[in-house]
Image 1 (spheres, helix red, strand yellow):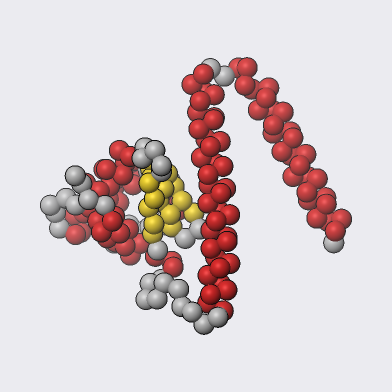
Image 2 (tube, one colour):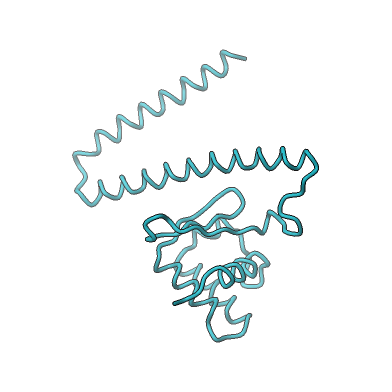
Amino acid sequence: MAKSKTKTSNSASSEKAALAKELRSLIPKLDSEGLAFLVEQARIHLYNMQVQELNKAAEAANAASLHKGKIANAGRSKADSFRIDRTESGSSYYLYYQNGNVMLSRDEMIDLVKIVNADRTEPEIRELLYNWFVRERKDIFALVPMADQFDAKLINLAKYIKKSFKLR
């Protein structure tokens, strides 16, 4: 069994080396804007890796807590739990759902807050929110699978945003 793990480790290591070599060969061909984009993506990916590690640690702690008979998040399903955190710079936000997240710009977050606080009926707000995701951020559906504007996850997300954020 140790050999299998070593082979997997060596395979991942050689794949990483091959990708690093390819990236080094592409760097001279990129302009400053392309390099800045890659650096920003690398920082985001590193942050996401840290979040995944923290989530794993939190899940382990939660499992240990549940094992001892304590109930976490009483009355609330983990499946419908949302969290939005602002970055230190305030230029972006991370929307967390289950074990994943997406990054939203400050302007996108403002758009979402405006939508959920609009002077409209709840069905109209859900439709506006769903259509905004379809038009502006289709990637949200990979994180939070929503069938349509009547989906409970969309309703819960709208309520969470409205409860947690206010326009100044």
